[in-house]
Image 1: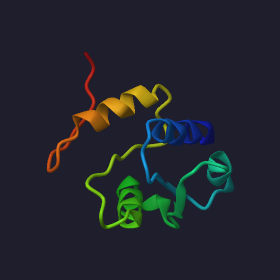
Image 2: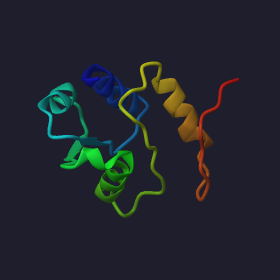
Image 3: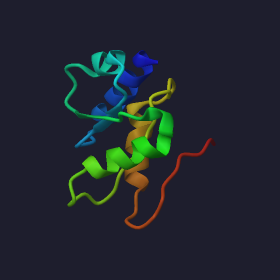
Image 4: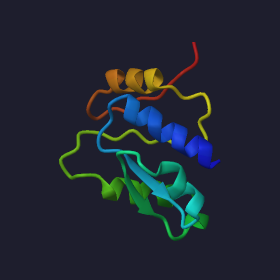
Length: 102
């Protein structure tokens, strides 16, 4: 899983997203997978509380001036920077944008 975590973060960064906030558990493998990347890591001390707790932690870590947020999960082996860029281009304030298969 740590490989996928690093890959997902790199896709977000390669798509030009800034800031990128990575919510990680206390397990060192996750932090190791992200070492050297231009992102902010915040820890979820209770990942057993579910993904919603990680999303809440990540959203709280964002600057207050941000217009929107793209939420992703670590296990996205087919994610590409191009797909992330397409989501960003489709963004409209006040709307939820989601990917769809063609």
